[in-house]
Length: 480
Image 1 (cartoon, helix red, strand yellow):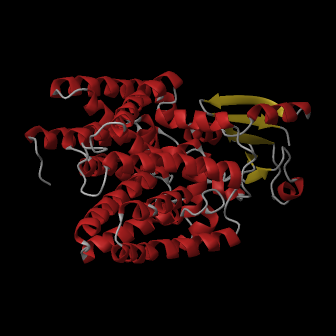
Image 2: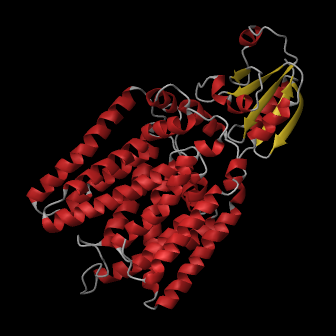
Image 3: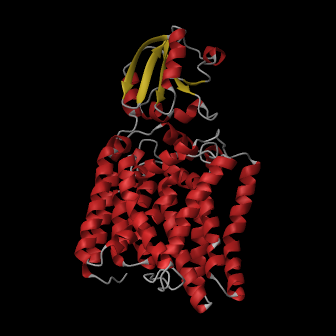
């Protein structure tokens, strides 16, 4: 890779190293949360397809995650870091990838700024420390758009694309589409770029043929998934939930989020002003096909609009972390607006450093969310010292068997039986099948469950004897 400035390479290398250190810091002390234990359970199945069938219950359409969890979980129950290794690698690779993509749109300066944003984004760090699809989704988006922009550049200018560029586009499109339902959304949005930026009919038909290799397999996969009912819908989502989710993905603090996106309003002002001037719209664009800022604006606006429409009308269930797919266009537009505020490099560096400082503040404000995951290992280790005959109860989660939560009992060689507590009750018939008499139960749950409701019900039945809390995890000793 050639650089225009001698310091660019060293800054990019430094940001990548920092990103790797931050993402690996205290990683082995972070215990798996309930969802990660479910993904681990999916991963230890006999084949990637079996892993996918189980995983579809909690992560609809996540075929790529099923394969990667199977690769990292099938052998090595004792290594949390191994299970998270692909997420870590993806999180680190995202730093140079967004630099490459941003430089395609604009210049190395914007590329460095966006690379810094990804390196220090608290949500990108957190996504890299989980067995989940968010970190993978981020790099698949970046790889796909690098391939897409290269493809559109070539075919719009020359009417011809090399075999390697065709293959790169198709493979990255399939990876993105199979990684997540939100990846499918991004592929469909990008498909409409052909209508905007390809003016000749013959070239447009060539472009459609390339996209068919991506959209047809994804469409068949989606059709199969819908027929298998592996898509979850939610109750009606309030508008504030969408706003709060976008805030969460940016900084998890409304004041900081507003500060971070503020430059985009300046960017909008510049381009609205240019619409009424004699200058060509977007004269600062560096790509060959049409206008960079327009492309990225469509990418961001359509992604947000598609997300809102899918959740409001189709009522697709989502987690706030799923919104990581809006970060690349958001970061690129912020970087571009920072550069346009001043034409002097020293002022651009000062402004970029200010926003980098805001990102650092958001890391410190979210340290507990990033690093203090529920300490299941510590909680379960407490049970190791219990010499009585007991069973472990887990609240019901998406019809998974009790074995799905056996990670830490197995890791700590605890032989106790596990049971699922359904609707605050547990099957006494199931428990009666155990050969040995049980003295009591340990109920283990985390912050993802409505613990106040559970405890109030159990207290009303006079079942709880005592309890202990380990940060996000709570265990209660209960009568049989």
